[in-house]
Image 1 (cartoon, each protein chain N blue to C red):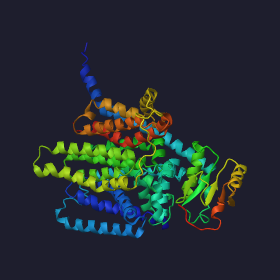
Image 2 (image 1 turned 45 degrees about the vertical axis):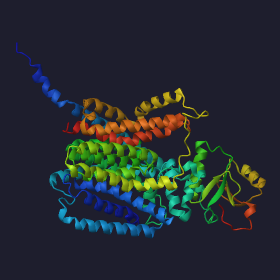
Image 3 (image 1 turned 180 degrees about the vertical axis):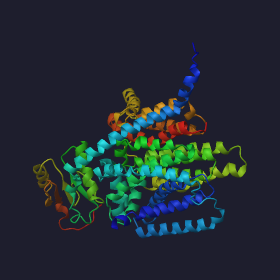
Image 4 (image 1 turned 135 degrees about the vertical axis):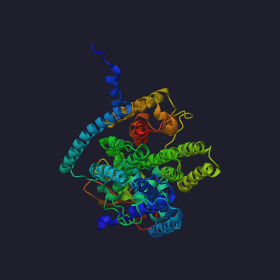
Length: 158
Length: 454
């Protein structure tokens, strides 16, 4: 009976499947599975964008800069919970669109105050309370009002 | 044509970087043309951001004329220095081995094909993720438009935008808008793609240089094919910028230890300085790298004669000083300090609890196993085992040492700062810490397994 030399059989296998090569095989497997996921993900994203084109929601605060041209600060009044992610997001979008004007949250002492409330009625109630004068309203219910204290002045605020 | 013109600032940055890198590495024959170009792009963008910051620091506003003039002066000076040093030059962005250059160039083209998926991810949210426009893009827009009222950015009421964060990314974008003259959204988008490609390309080129293995291509592909990585990289956050400068710093330090070329210490120093201006985590990483890199350079050169012993360390310290000086200026002059910090060790209202510790330590492991990483951390973990301890020995010890110290400090910060509800905080930040460490980790493991160096 011929003698089987186990070392002669297994040595080349150990040489091929050393730590380095095993790692590269695993890495190749990860790259392969990742690539499949990547291509599927890109296709689904393209489909999503074909159906729903991207809209930056901060756009609802655009078009106010021509009125607010010299303002450094304006008030931003909201009855929403700003610790809530979605409401914080809305505030951040307003701040981003209106930069470099700084939005002072719930401070109604500034010359201009932006009202972004849960309903138009809530905003109008607050506007009446502080005797502000609404000067611009858009289709998203965002109201820009002027503080009556500044009605006859053009002073720059701090 | 207009579309190309708006990218001219980035090309000026690349040119400045190439001149500086070619001067620093004039005696370094090992570094390939591609590697120099990728390093140069990172250095050039960092320099341009710092020059833009000088305009705010000295003229108290964005002054494009000053910035352009400074760039022109810097380019002229670097060009003259390069001409004067020409006789000393042994390599001029060398392409010595044509077949090596062609093959590595082809593999780079493969990596560049990933611009398409990156572009697809980037344009899905052209304004970036919501943290991007709440913090980074808002700051860039504010700096661009605010004139001499730019310091309002640091007012306490701006705490939601983290006013204590350094400004490297916003300043790169402000510089990028120099030609469009208005804050167009395509520049932050392009910045995120540029830094992703720079990170992936530098990982490939660094591995190729230090291992001479074409399997180096696998390393960047492991994460460039990962949808989650692409989403974070193109969300216009600062994490990709931090990730690039962190990896470039460690790569240059490791390359110095392998090749003994002092030019790497200068480059490492520049990158560490830029890293310190990215984010608070970047400043911490830069501090660790400065101490760790300085010690490694000192120990590596201690048996050599005087000039070889002192000059790499001196060059390293001077380079860090040159680029980190503006971070120090920012911290001293403008940063209002962290307003979202409560020391839980001394606070009776929000004390550190055992539950908090438990949550943090379990999250550290759970995030690694999160399906959005598609087992990439598992692969790297297996790599540590398969390297049979090689990854902890010799010159590569700098990687595990850095990762351990950095994660120790990050974990301690999570424990001590009790200002935020811990589960929410870990959910929104821990994956970014791992994201920025991924190229460093990938290089470390691949280099341990592919390299012939023990």
